Image (cartoon, rainbow, N blue to C red; front, side, top):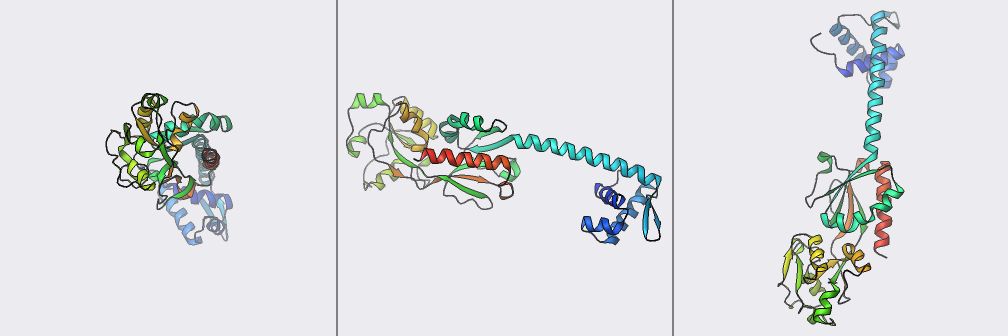
Length: 301
């Protein structure tokens, strides 16, 4: 043969062979009886053999028809098993994208708890600041720090955040205690350049505006393109960073960072889980989402 017949024609034939009725096959396939009859006739012409004996008001498979029906049924069963195996692989792997700082500072330290609860899910993390089209990349979910407006996607709010100054205990030991914002601004300031003017409310200017100090000078100091780098610089004693609480709770707990002045401001952005509307009910996504909710709730209490 020059080419194989279409899979759709073989599928229609297979259903008709099972029912020995074009009418019943049409009901199952949501086609008209004439459409089923036409496709079977076209298949017979392509193959050059008669597949059905049309006997008054009933059908009977010819020997060629019986042979083809058996082979098609076997092929469909093989394809179904292959798809089932693909589904098992797909169900085991969950791909999630997020900012590098969120991955390293918030999610990864919590992963041992997730794997203890869900050892069957193979988590694949993509730490990348760029937005991804989940439909074209095969990525299951994205964790985003933003306003929650993501048209065409299913969006779940995970948690709000707040910003406050943090620094190494060594820095305070060198410069002395901080009791006012003015005294804080005398220390070396560290900046996350990606947040300046992005509307997130996580830069020094936004923090000072929140406390009524719009005229205070805060533009001096070293700048970093990522919140993770900013926090690393603060841990090393290079200065005072304005950090999101979600990214420094562990550092505060083990005292590699301290809060020299306990003044926190809410961020304009929050954390959201973003996914495809058609996949929100998938078992692996539901389990990961529920776990994220529990971890987010624990982080904000």
